[in-house]
Image 1 (tube, helix red, strand yellow):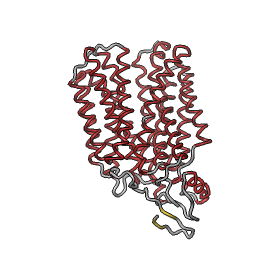
Image 2 (cartoon, rainbow, N blue to C red):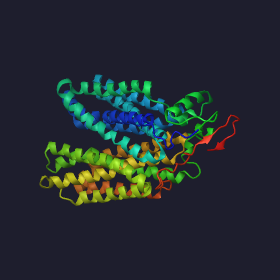
Image 3 (cartoon, rainbow, N blue to C red):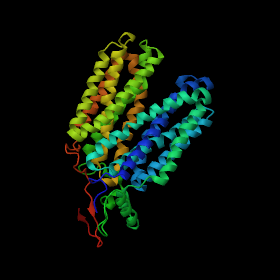
Image 4 (cartoon, rainbow, N blue to C red):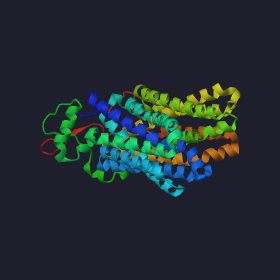
Length: 453
């Protein structure tokens, strides 16, 4: 029986990519809804903006924990169950925030919502990796990740449409109902990972039927094996096993500093531009420029990885992000150089967005199937800790060093992400069709003895 991640890329497999992209879209929407609701919340509750900082921080902490826990649960109970459960959790918690009457309950709901938002990413990425042929994986994961900022754009559209009429309660309600409805659709349409099904002898017929839908004909009583069954019981330990410790730590370092740089820009560029004298409309355009660059960079990064291999692509992207941040610190940041500043933000978003998506692609590549979601989740969760830290780095560096100091911190973070990518050994080879670690399937004949495929 051929692997579901072989050369065939059926319309059914592409449908899995489309479903995961939809999940990432509502994930990005739910992640950014608080920021859109804040002005109305501050007005209605007569509460200063600083009082909402713990709410935002707890949401990010929830995302960090959810990214790590979601991967572990996905490896144990299935990527399908992990993704659907994550959608339901952050959908229900976001919709429930519409009934909030104080900071305490909103803080709890945002933390719980963050758990679901984080849990969706590793399970969605693992499904894409395992349903996509090897030569298309880098591009598929990069393309799907661009739907996270698409969700951010959708949140802006919903905010502009709903806030004037229905207020922040209506915005939370609609933003929560969308992932709940999508979860119901997933119950009916989303398949389980074939490599997860290989662990259960009683699901052999289900596995065979799924592989036929992927365009592969069966060849008797053999089945695919994800890897040693004993290792499934201790997925976290497997991340630090023989030959994995250095790469796991290097990947975590790269993720941490990439997200520290990304969220430092994402969270504080509007404040920085306003302090430099830009009107409010232009501060929003600054973030749009950064996100636009990130969307293009994410897709381009996948294309580069497929053609150059991940080492050359990621080092180039991290190096470009470092140089771009240094340039932003040198460039004049005032209304008389608006086009220059916005153009520089597009370029910086391009490099950081490409690096971010590349890290997810490498994480899916380097871990074997039985710990793939755990590995992706642990690495991305570590990165989310950097996102939490960005809540403090941005405001402190602007206060102490002004724009130059602010962008210097971003440049330093990108430089450390470059080092993490350099130290990493298990990169995707230049020939994108080469299988990843643990990616070569095995057969289990009727007699139970394993053979190499």
